[in-house]
Length: 102
Image 1 (cartoon, rainbow, N blue to C red):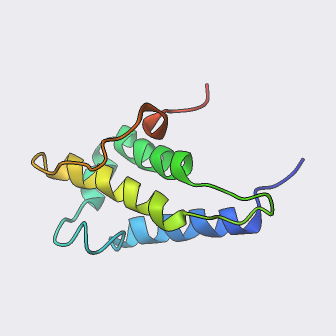
Image 2: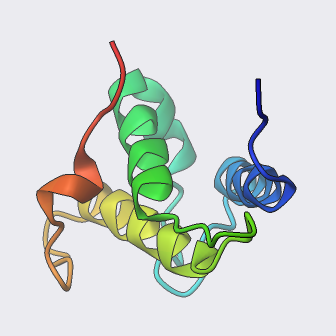
C-alpha cells in the first residue's frame, strides 16, 4: 500500500500545527481566537480539514503546489464561522466543502 507523499504529509502537519497553535493565516484571522469554537463541534473542525484537503493540489512528483491557497481557503471558512459579516471571496464552490468517506 502506498503512503501519502512526504510533501503532502508535511503540508498536513504544518496545517495542523498552525491551526492548533492559533497562527493560521495571521492576517485574515487577526484577533480571532477560533480554536475553542472549532472544538465546540467536531463538524467545524471536520470542515476545516475537508476544505484544506479538497483544495490542496499535488503534482505528478507528489509535491504540493498550493498549500498556502488551501490554508487560506480553510482560514476563510473559519473567519466566516466566527464573523458572520465576513464575505468569502470568491464564494466556496461545492467541491471545496464536500465531505468524503463513509
